[in-house]
Length: 70
Image (cartoon, rainbow, N blue to C red; front, side, top):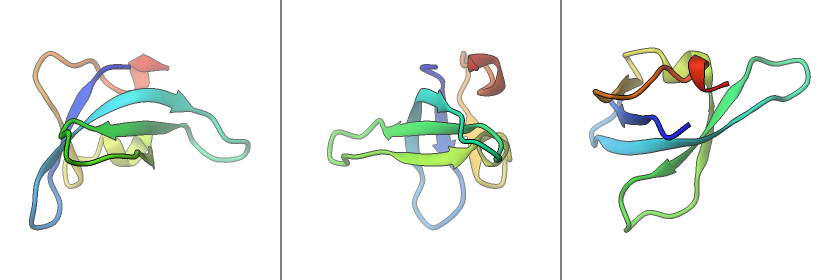
């Protein structure tokens, strides 16, 4: 937890921080992300697999992998 990621798909890039790894019955683990920008609020929950796909997110230097945060 605390790892930071840059969202790489879409027109605008944004930075997100992993706040929690959540486990739901019957599906792979998911990461709960909060935005780094103060102008944004709320959170998003995405699969750890998607978080580790460079087409969607790129882990920023100095961060551990999301799987290690479990």
